Image (tube, rainbow, N blue to C red; front, side):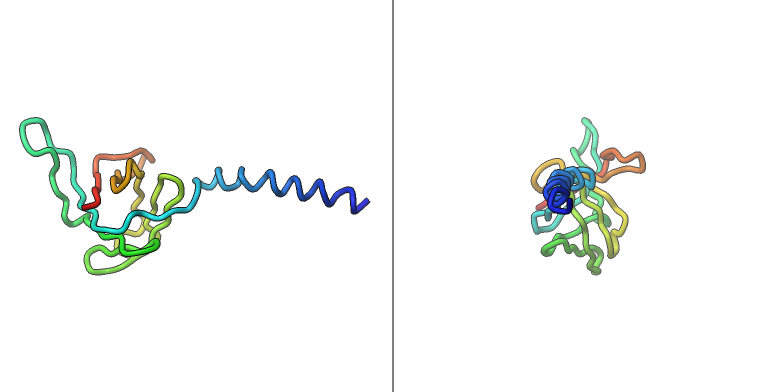
Length: 118
């Protein structure tokens, strides 16, 4: 009887793994290293963006960043980034393109603040 269950359990484990990975937010990744300058949208009569230098940060390596002279870590799953420690802990971003992030607002949707890698 045990020999019959072994292949069935192995098949169940293999087919469940992709579903678990998808439900947890996608593949783990990292952001391109460099300094990210953050800004709010401007208007048609003025500048295209209004810098927010107090929100700038730098990705320094695998899942690490610095901001305001302190360091922290982040987790990137699929196209979502969550700052997990450090000065920006709790901040969330959507990856809109290579080196282009938008902060996630309280409703869980991309908000107005955008950060661009320079």
